Amino acid sequence: MTSHLPLGSRVSGTRLAVLLGEWRRRGSRQGAADLAAAVELQVLDGQLPIGTRLPAERELADALGVSRTLIGAALDRLRSTGVVASRRGAGSWISGAGHRSAAPAQHERDGLIDLARAAPPALPGLINAVDAARRDLVEHLSGNGYLTGGLPLLRERIAERYTARGLPTSPDQVMLTAGAYSAFVLCLRMLAGPGDRVLVEQPTYPNAIDAVRAAHALPVPVALDPVRGWDLTGIEAALRQASPRFGYLVVDFQNPTGLRLDAAGRERLGGLLARSRTPVVVDESLVELDYEGDPLDAPPPLAAFAGDLALTVGSAAKSQWGGLRLGWIRASAELLDRLLSSRFAVDLGAPVFEQLVLASLLEPEGYAALAQRRVDFRLQRDSLIDAVHAYCPEWTFEVPAGGLSLWCRLPEPMSTRLAVSAANHGVQLAPASRFGVHGGLERWLRLPFGLPPDQLLEAVRRLSLAVESVRGYADVPAANVPVT
Image 1 (cartoon, rainbow, N blue to C red):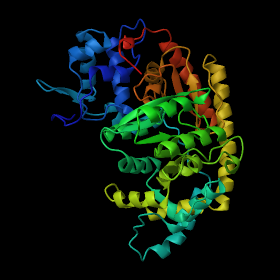
Image 2 (image 1 turned 180 degrees about the vertical axis):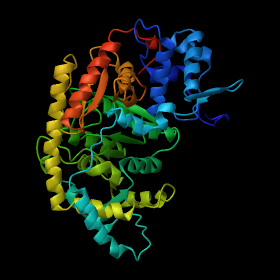
Image 3 (image 1 turned 30 degrees about the horizontal axis):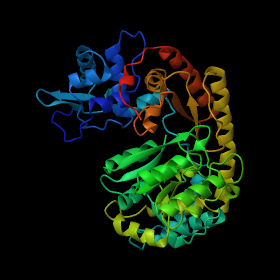
Image 4 (image 1 turned 30 degrees about the vertical axis):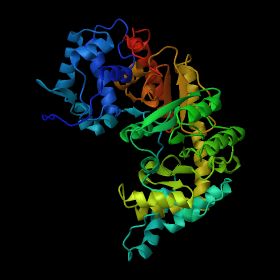
């Protein structure tokens, strides 16, 4: 356990109450255990980083509407498991991820099913691409290995794909990065600074929210209806009233809702961004996972309508494999020059070998394998839908035309409590509060379908047991906490 006082930021009682959501089970006599489990979940989920200073016991008790005795007992539990450390006169802080994180392989032996990550296994044919990359690597060994913009062949193939999708692109408009998240952080560093506003969807990709806050910028959420989709009138108002420095949008199989913006909506949204001269980072990490048709026949990229201030982020993680850790940015040559000049403060470029592997996967044979992957994922999606209908029939959702997850509406506010209980039943979940700028979303749950059908069926069966263990339990007075 960390014994020294860390230099991390402090979380207020109000903010911690929002993160914890409705954590206490109705009628439970184990309030301290429930609270400790909910705090540990936020630590494991990255919402409470190591070093975060916790509010005083009285402040937290007032925010949660519970006694200081319960708060003290919960902190004792967290101290005993190594999650929290305390010092007289200095308070308490997050000191670790608990005993369970010390042996992650134990989760695998215990049969833990991971539904917290919407990330599939490697694309079939990856080994063949690795063998081809080994042969191609020889010609690069005489150089220094630093390709700041990326492997020319790979940039060319990515540019060709954009052009085929309706966005004419040259290789000098593509830069390779160490994943889509790294690409977003590079864009964020260039476009915004402390105190600047960043327009985002609500709900949205949690790591994007975290990155915006880490840059001391302010995420400005615009609600995304899980049925009707994007509120373009609301976005127009936010652009006019908040004057964000840039927007972050996912218009292809949006994470977590799975929604896709149609061509007319893209044209209108792109026009709004272009007229207001608002840069936009468009995350296309899931664009190749289209189960209703060929991605080349889909609506053109949003950047085709948004003008020269659009930056499109792509990724190999969802379509090929996250282990490659490769992403890219497509933008105007002028914007890429600005990105390249500031990149050295972050990294010196993506690794050559992995780029050679991806270049091989983007040959015609690789796209044939990707077409088969879409068939497989559609079957997995349908298997998950059948399992939810069988075991959790009260849950509702829109069937996504692509992507990797269902966004399920629960019969009562229970997302955080369900995530805590599900871990005890062998299923790891991300509570829906992670997808909201200010927490909340307790009536929602994301269920990824990147696993084989038998695992998805077993996961939902276990979830049905977890639901019964939390159904109808009393909610902590989180209603006293303002959530927007």
